[in-house]
Structure formats: C-alpha cells, structure tokens
Image 1 (cartoon, one colour):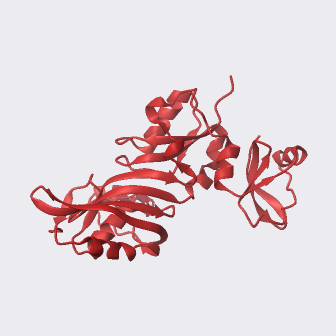
Image 2: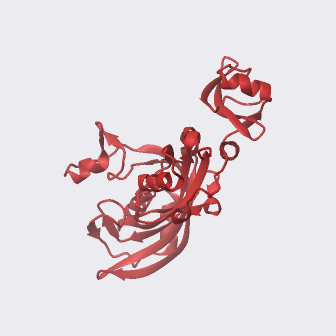
Image 3: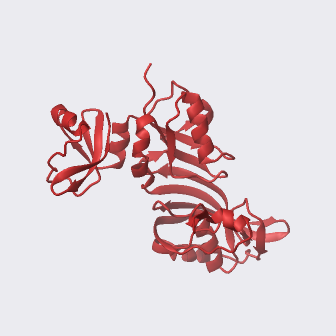
Length: 294
C-alpha cells in the first residue's frame, strides 16, 4: 500500500497547537512526513492546511495566501498577550462607545497598514522567540511591518459587564494578508478608541482557497480521509500551465523547459494532466524549478 500524499484541511479545535495537530495527523495516517501552513494559536480554531508526504513541499506557497477570520474583541480590557490567555493589565469603561465610533476606528485599520505584531509572538529577536523573552521578564517591542487588511467588518456589538467592569464585545470579520495578527488589530482598535482591547475568540474561516467547507474534524482523520491531490491544491493556489507527458518527464529529470510566453514571472505550477510536475519561476526564458514531483 502506497503512502498517502496530498493536502488535508483540518478544522483545528481549541486547546491544541498547530504542531500538535501535525503529530495527531502523523499518528492517524501512519506517516512521518507531515507539516502545516499558517500557524494558529492554541486557543484559535478553524482552517489549518496540512501537507502529507511530498505535498509538504507545497506548504511554502500555501502559507503565503491571504486569510479570513471571525473574531470576538473585548474593548475595555487589555491583556499582556493581546488575547484571552494573558493576564489583564488594564481596564477601562467602554460602555459609552457607539457603533459608529467603533466602525470609524476600524476604517483606519483597513487597507495597507503598518502593524506592530504582539510582543508575545513567535517572531525571533536576536535568535530567540519574542514570547520566550517576554516570559523571561524582558520588555519586547517588535518593529512594525506592512500588512494588508482587505476587509474589517463589524458584525455585532453589545455591552457586557466582566469582573465588575463595563466592556463592549464586538464580533468582527477580518480578511487580511498572510502575516497579519488579528490580536494586534484588537489591541490597536482598543488603543484608538482609548479603552484598550484584546481578542477573546478567533476562528479562521479561510486560508487562501481553502475554507471550512473543505475541512475535516481532527478526530475524524484516518487513512480513509480524502486528501486533495497536489495538482488540485496547486490549481487553487497558483497560476498553472499544462504540459505534455514528454515535457513532464524531462522536467522530472531537472531539464529547464522554455518558459511559456503568457505565464508571467512565476511561481507557476506545471501540470501533466492530473499530476503536478513541479513549481517554477522564470529565469532567462527557462523554467527554474523550485519544486519537482516524482
């Protein structure tokens, strides 16, 4: 029996790391070579793209895709980690906020913006993870980075009382580029409104072309689970070019093929029927292969 190969979309449950999901999939499918694209925090749920077998070599392309989330923000409560897992560092009365005020502040955080990631993130500072530095007592303020928030919509808002403090709870939808921190959006929205804020819940509903409709529950993963073929995953994510079986055989031996005139600069997925031959970029009018599939 051949080893499984393809892309599996997991609906990640709360309380497990993305690496923990990979370990569970390895055990369920009986294969060592498993990886994921686009880390989700343990308390976050939703779409996690998992590569199985040689398809792990596609994950770099799949991780670069844009993402969509639904999230609950608590305005009026700031935490150390900008989410519900961290200690509260400040409260503010947020009951006077109006829907119009919240949406106006959200508008300023929409489009191409400079975002400072949460200090409790996996970004490395002098070779160490930022969250490790924070947990060891160091003050960490990461540099801003350009991100794009294509949509930032207020779905619902209501006043609540939490631990004797008056907060506003906002349900939002975020469509953003890879590398955007929704936790940072909650923090920055709260700061813009003068009350602070954090993410209470976070659910990824889409990663690139993959949605919850494609997803399987982690507990249901088994050797009978349907894997998306590498060619199907590539079609959803990258521009594609169809080539002949003869050209595919040459490519699989490392031969650089003439670059198609209408293919752009790449990366482009080259397909032989329903088989993914490889992914390449244009270099001096030829294919420079970054991934080739046997």
